[in-house]
Length: 345
Image (cartoon, rainbow, N blue to C red; front, side, top):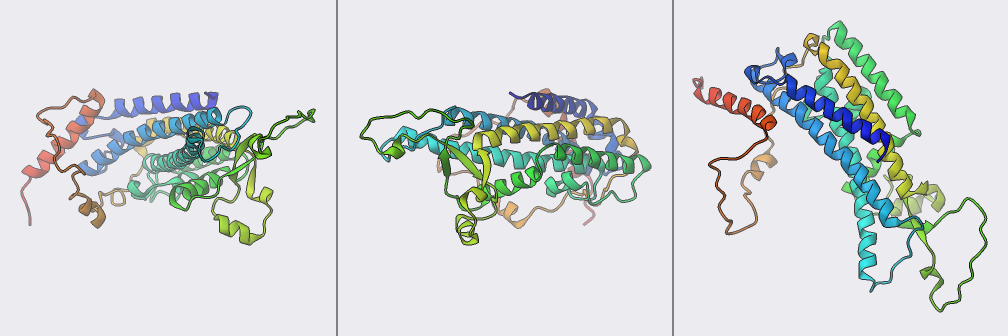
């Protein structure tokens, strides 16, 4: 595992511990949200901790998928299997799945960091709709911010910009476009090219009746313009080498792991620096209010599973991690207070 990944993972663990320690059940959440209404404070405080947990999962998924792709491709590439070579064809499909998962996780990680940006800087955006744009721009600016908050936004934006510029130009935009293409659009034709070599090598002569293509070892390559479909690429008239990245997919994913880990580590370090001064920030109470559920979410309430005869589960008691129990007790207390309050309608 890369040093950048390890550093980011340790940073996330420190941030998680800091948030859990600061979470106070008596005041229904994190103390710096003291100006926010109790229910909103409780929900957004829980959300901050949950986003850190999600970042840990996505960061780990990027690294694991990159490792899987490199292992499956192998140091010398692969030959293309025949239709009846079931296991080899399944491994080729696994490579596609792992590439997709790496890009999915990377895009999700950027979105999660965007949510943390909103919750730590007080951006006037519903945290439920935060994404990578808020991480990369730190906008919209807080409304009526304190001097400390205004400075914090400027420093945070500079730190993120610097971390992004460490990588090659356009790498974050490429990551997001690739995530969207592989997760939300039609599957593109897989491109495998002969294993490249930097030095002239003496040819190896093989006497065989096998088709020459069966001996050719190849690496997978990813697209340079992931927003274009196969048909769009063909219509554009671009040469094949202009439509592909100039390195094999396993190298691209290793680089993505390292650079997104560096960016994550930078963001986490900046968030940890903010904690001591968050009590002097101005928070957008109205913009962070709990929104009504959508019609689709309400319709989803009617679904209870696919089984016609499920085995009943005893819910008389459940075992929770103390960390989660502390957070959920707050929500139960608020629920009971709301239920006991007189109805003004």
